Length: 550
Image (cartoon, rainbow, N blue to C red; front, side):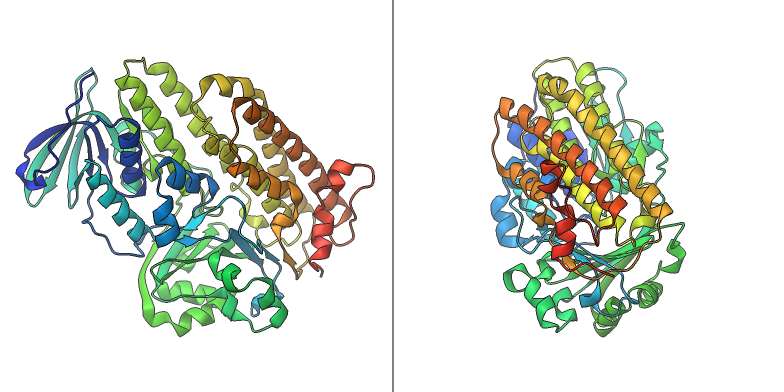
């Protein structure tokens, strides 16, 4: 298959029609990062990105996905080689932090807190999306990728044969035609190809969100002057660096600092507990916070005149029947699937999808047949999506539970670091041979996760939770620290396979101890003397050491 590299020095308005090897519709995080990954992998490709916005976009851009976790950070830092920008222009993240409700949520220091005291071995970042996407767009242009901004797509014409696909768009009152071998929809919730091809699939997860930006720092660490509370996380490890979650039954609130000096605030709730109609305007959202998170609402009222934007979205989760086709079209980012922002997985799914698309394009331009690889990557990507969905579907009722939810968070972190993050950072996602060898381990971890997520729901529904206070460093659980550290330790194929089997054993032991911890009660449990492997995990001592009590 031939390649037609275009002259990128010509101004966009001088084209009426052009051709490209790859056309990416959507120049946000998913589309721009895919363009860079394709360029790094196949330097001879001609790539055009068509974007409706005009670059440069404003900083603190009105988009979700500001919080990244380990998989996405590895993708941006090591796959796309953006380490310098992340370290100099974005904020390092002190992990995910959770505050459970206590006595009406008037005093942050009285709430049960889960969060690391030190930065974990595997890094993560808070992304100012506007700043990041401006940098990515500049980098694309530097690397010969054509960015057509201020463009409105009017039609996507898919070829049923071997001929090119066609993108028709309008720009500056002119009509343009872009013919391409590969067409990627990265246009987010516009869902261009999903709607056109009837690929939409209803998600069973019914939750909604409203979010806004404040033009100032909203620092959780300043919400208390209690000395021991401040000493726990302060200075270079201030809670301000975390993605902070304020937890309650059926909801959570995010507080995310941005490198531009703004703060992102969001309310996320399951519809059955807190309908979006209760917080779908700025004033209603702050009033909702006054009822459920009064301390947070009071801090926001003090700086309400700095509010930069507001958006609400009902039933944000969506599924898709397929995302890749051997007819050379693909969906990536929110154009395909989206689950839930609770554990910040949005950029992870971008990284996975873009990596699979890049592998398909590479195989195609090498003259390899596509159907088998397309089927494999479709199944793998959507299986990760649906296996992750069990973490959220029907689980929001647990979010205010001080006994079950901390252990669920421990479990969810462990499974993420043990499987999907582990496979990605060690570059085994596209390794068919290795995947087939470890498939039984992958399937066992998936089945165990389904068992545990149902266990958490069943336990919650059978027991009345009690409010607790205290502080828990999640990395005090040795197995969690070791799973996280393994994400930054290079492994050859044999070490990877052995490590994944070891991860399964860790998860099986952790699952057993979680069940024991809940059965016997987290306040009084001491580690079982019958099992040194369980005792070494120290779940119960973790609770006791951090002063967790009624």
